[in-house]
Amino acid sequence: MRVYSFSRGGIHFTDPTVPPRDSSITAFLPGLSVIPLVQHIGSKANPVVSVGSRVSEGMLIGRGQGLGSANIHATVPGRVVRTVSWKMAEGLTNDALVIKLDGSFEKLGRHEEIFPWQSLPAFELQRIIAEYGIVEMEGSGRPVSDMFYSLRSAGTPVTLVVRCVFDDPWLAADYVLLRERLEAVAEGSRIAARAGRMDRIVLVFSRGEKDLGQQLLEAMTKAELPVSLALVGARYPQRNRRELELVLERFAREEGIELGTILALGPATLAAIHDAVKLKKTILDRYVAVGGSAIKKPQVMKVRIGTRIGEIFAECGGFIDKPRRIGSGSPLLGRTVVDLDEPVIKTSFAIFAILPGQIGGGARSKCIGCGECRVVCPVGLDPEALYKYMNGSDSRDVHVGRAAECHGCGCCEVVCPSRLPLSTSIIRSALKGN
Ligand code: SF4
Ligand code: SF4
Image (cartoon, rainbow, N blue to C red; front, side, top):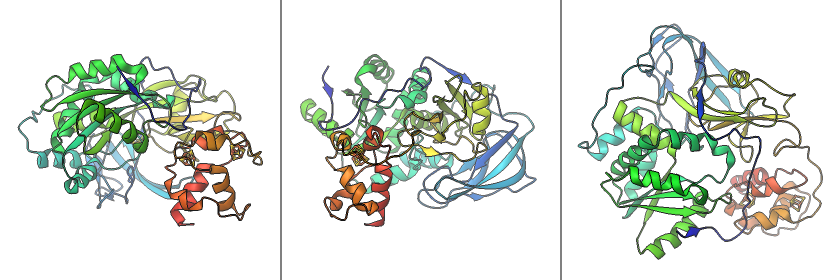
């Protein structure tokens, strides 16, 4: 089977400090759950409960407000004991409801009632997906209902891309989820395709996961639409939209099919769509890869949303030594965590604690002009020149007009021996219109 790869730049990213991908373990339920009102890209959900309110597992506690915002639900039964606010690394504030565990679970350990969806119209499926607050869980946090909404103005055909591209080892949790919940991902894909009135499904797998791709293809024999499997390279950032579209264009040409507009969703989101529509269940848990050089026992854990990061590290044996950096997401692009009381949210696919010397953990020094950043940029930019211009250390306006083409993959930053914050600065400046 042919393997499709983008042609320029990129890196082969390996990291021995990520957890093994063989299975997940279930984390302890937290006594206190911290449920942020922002677990999506848009504005804060409007709380519909207050301090003292009793809540049940899966109950709506915050209503999404407009585009980019999603409903928020309690993930444990109990009582709201207080509200908290904390500053995140970027200076933004997040507000959360703190729930003290108390009472019985309505979902956990109970027989799951199945709700048939095959006869439901697309708009009803979309309504259910919005009601249960499903967002893109592989990082962006964009509400899936907004994604469906944006398809209304798209021409036809529309293709659902089931994105199983593991170009970053920190996607270990989604890999484990895919293996453990293959049937749910398969059915979630069929539901998503129906909800988005799509014409075709393409399963996109990294070349090393061909067998898993075949298994998912076999699990989709009941699909109402044509389904095909495409193998892509594992060089990072293959799963980025730009690089994905580049290779899918070639795939479609050679297969003689038309893909039209593409909507790409990952395994965690598709399993959540399955749970919302078929089990009437919101996102209660997240598979999380917990690792990094400072962690004693890296592992993939199934964690209840709202569990504090400090408690998860404790379940992994704590720290070997004082971490230089703690973060959420992949160390390639992840967000720094400044407070261990921050909780796991819908988009927390990985959390890490790293010692000096690991990617993102080293001290900065001056550019040595090695040119490595240029070699790995998949867009063909000159990150060194852009960084220096934006930093004011070089006044020559070399390629600044192209800064907006940077899609923030972080390749330049990873290879920079001087540990300069290249992509972060370039994106920030491009957003400001510099
Ligand atoms: S300049 Fe932008 S697109 Fe190029 S490698 Fe750096 S982050 Fe990626
Ligand atoms: S990789 Fe870093 S040190 Fe090398 S040229 Fe680019 S900015 Fe300078």
